[in-house]
Length: 439
Ligand code: ATP
Ligand code: MG
Image (cartoon, rainbow, N blue to C red; front, side):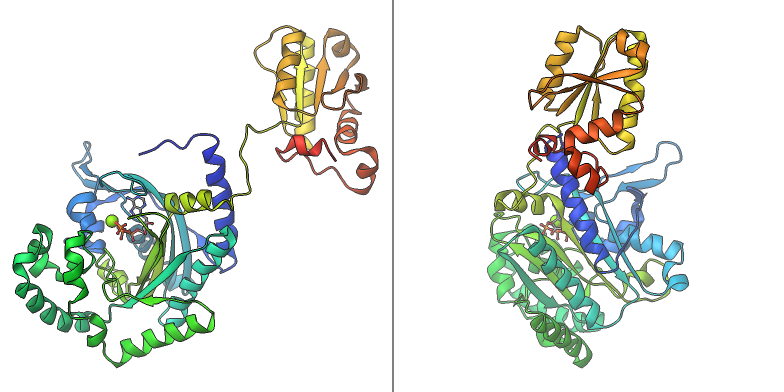
């Protein structure tokens, strides 16, 4: 579990801004669920025989009432619980929802795999057709484009219906039994409880066995096949290339029909940056009225790693530069300094008010190293006259005094130039003060 420090946290915020705009473009609305849920929600939703529920959940007993709780390992279960509990779909029709935030899984930490990590999750509740499946995928492609990420490949599969999976399962178990000696311990344990999971084993030795296993695709009925075909046609029309991966079954039990993963080859073993699919049975399984649904979750850490390596990250994060630094000495001066700083923030400037006292000289040094364009200088003289000294820090001009009333216009004029002020209302600082200096 990592701290995200200043410098990096700005990159996160920048990413989140882009993501919010992108989601708005597809009509998604935000939802925020608790980080802690009753533990049974997750084994009912995700499945008992899955990596997450068997070995990755941070579950504990509430010391006050003995209830079993868990830190959420993913967001779909909580999102669906919330939608059922608050009757979202019944009252508002189909819902396009998204959330973002920390998820928790007790995994072996390595590059791209953490115990607290972050997901952006997107859930479309109440949609039956292949159109929403395709849209969920197309929107992913748009985001990679907006971030300037290349080399993220789409893998696609269909898990069919529960009944089709049951038929496939018979063949799969027979096949795996014939390979018993070569199965690892996990696979042996899951052979009868959840054989499908063996197909997405992380163990490379299992891969060859999985590769040659009976394919779900051969067990799809007409409806599932038509649905899958329709998704593919929409993707092809949108110019999205993909690869059918018969081993793609996803690590959670709730999926059916379309499943997909976006995979980068630049992240080593932890290459999946986004994964999802259809989960038509989940709402009913969690106690709601039967309702089709589909969604995906993307791993923020992995996407940020790609974004930073891609060189597309234009936003260079340095110590933020204030527009104005306020230097002051004496009680009356301090009162005026507070008023002056607030007056400038009223019109959008970023202001660092010197705190902690010290001589004018040492304060001016701080003003200078802050990168601010202007210093306001307020001593007892100025305070007595309700006036403020303005000293340009970058252009070498001299200090002059203005009345408190005239301060906003004088500062805006000094920063933007008087002519620009007549054309435009002051826009305020944007944290890029040094650049404003060249305007
Ligand atoms: P994996 O096969 O890598 O364990 P998963 O199937 O468990 O992935 P999902 O539950 O589908 O992953 O989560 C969606 C996305 O969240 C993943 O594709 C990945 O980008 C990210 N993710 C999952 N677990 C972690 C983790 N422990 N640390 C960082 N990111 C993660
Ligand atoms: Mg996992």
